[in-house]
Length: 256
Image 1 (cartoon, rainbow, N blue to C red):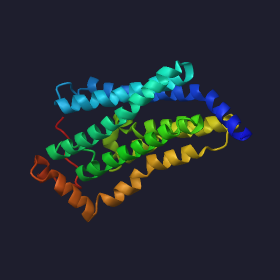
Image 2 (tube, rainbow, N blue to C red; image 1 turned 90 degrees about the vertical axis):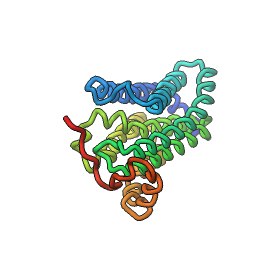
Image 3 (cartoon, helix red, strand yellow; image 1 turned 120 degrees about the vertical axis):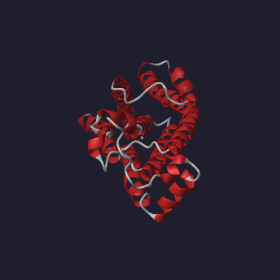
Image 4 (cartoon, rainbow, N blue to C red; image 1 turned 180 degrees about the horizontal axis):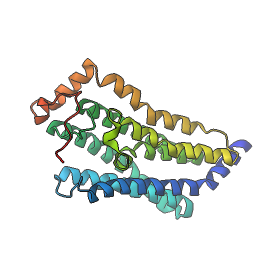
């Protein structure tokens, strides 16, 4: 019990680290999408689903960052209230994440550095891992040492779209999805180093978190090129423009 108390006390002292990590991750996401907007690769002239998806996912970034700072500075009543909002918000994120992935593949507009079939399986599986980490973090909200670390890992799992826009993604083909996901692991690794420097042993929350972040890579690469992947893709695009696009071929790049 004494050891647990010391660990929780040290975890409480670590809260500013998680708040600053949340802020940096939020800046990465904003910078990635802002860069593409400034370069003309993104536009506000998009269909409503894209805008709703963007508002909800950016809303999560704001919620996550606010939660991290409220844990440090309070009021804790606001932290608890936002926690309840977060639980509902995540469900909305999952639904919209699945929806827009299917919509993009059906329309045949998958980014040219992703194979449509791989994209169709990878995004939802990645979101499922995010959801699992959030559920675990919420269930362990009364254990700050677990809660903060799992939240950090959950946000890390969502950095791929923002981070990928800062990296030279077209040059990373055929691993343009996997590499940003692995680069994002720098955040939980920084947490492990921070713990070590403060005399805290390797926390199992980081193990589970990093497994959840990296697990989609082997699973998706095993499923996507198989008959099962073919069947999922064919069923999804049947009757849509994406039906004529080969699932495991990279689409041609847009005209310069």
